[in-house]
Image 1: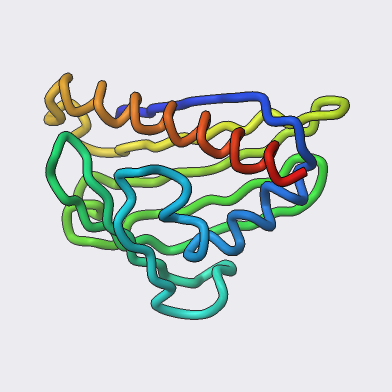
Image 2: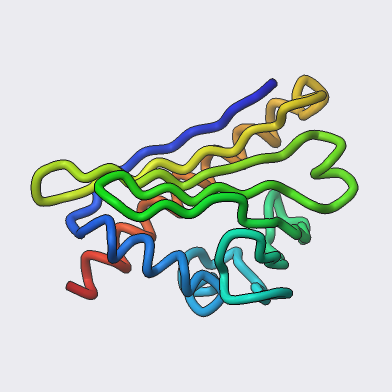
Amino acid sequence: MITLKNSIEINTTPEKIVNWFENFDKHYLEWHPDHVKCVRLTGSLGVGDVVYCEEYLHGKLHKFKFKITKIKRNRKGVIEFKGLSVLERIFGEKGSFIIEQKEDSCIFTATLSFQRFGWLFPKTLIEIIKKHMEEEGKNLKKLLENNL
């Protein structure tokens, strides 16, 4: 199993971060310049809903379909999802966004896990994904702190 993780402190409330993610399809393109498309396939981005996204990684277009498996709102917000495409299911792809309150700010942590066959991923691809996750964290911080 491979788990990638990135954390960043954001000067906002857990509620604002969870609200931002509940409107994920509207914010996806502003979150990272390599993001191309995001469409809700079902529902309103709640538990059980399915989302389709496209983004560039290492210069190649990647298409993702995932199901939201958990949303929790309180002092520790949690949004969990799992991949639905054939490859994502084979690799057991799962991820989460965890928002922990810290006095007047929050620690935002993004994780992405490949439960099976993660050792098949080239190290260069793992590094590209890590860098992308770090950039998303920094961009989210800018977006949310500038909208205070």
